[in-house]
Image 1: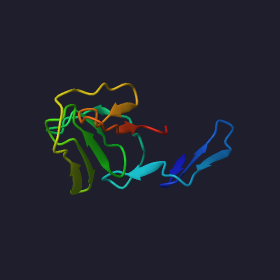
Image 2 (image 1 turned 90 degrees about the vertical axis):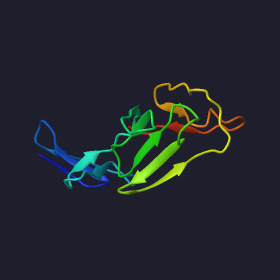
Image 3 (image 1 turned 90 degrees about the horizontal axis):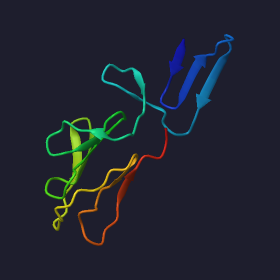
Length: 119
């Protein structure tokens, strides 16, 4: 047995006692069927046209380009989204290292990174 909310997880331990994790931060998001799923902000390869990486196991989805030629990044919630598109770009690919993606490595003089902080 396991019970979940956005900010809590309750489960039965081997000795049949209950244990709970309760936080101020979100642990879960509701999928399209309304079931609570663990948030996972790791980057993975994207099938979304124009984007190389994505993080979609959350209440919103994040998409990132691997070069400065397309939309740089998109944050999407349902059918609404915002995209960042710089006017000046370099044609370099950022180096993805584990949980870090230097997003604006293609723009001279700007340092912005996507960093997975939890989980």
